[in-house]
Image (cartoon, rainbow, N blue to C red):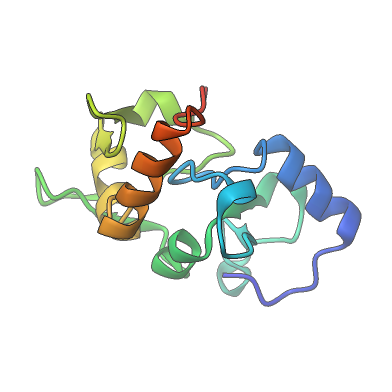
Length: 143
């Protein structure tokens, strides 16, 4: 979570780099009723800095569920893994879309642990994805 002031120019760079999408669940900020947040991947409380390489665009729910966590349990193996880091990992290496494009599937232990910890398939966001899909604007192509 962020409590630090982030300069407007830095915020703009984070938003542009993320293509205005949550870097975790891929929800588009443009169609969300909530204002997206700039979050510290490595929290300030654990030594993270307010710099471009430590910032990500996150929807409020992903940011809230992530909080200061840096790891989570993979529900398939029961082992602890780091939460997905959008600065050093590629989204498509850890996540896949379900056949109906409304659910995110973990392709790796990191993906599964992140989905579970951030509740990336909560009913409201799945409904949001279905509505965006019906409008032809979901999913985005992510790397």
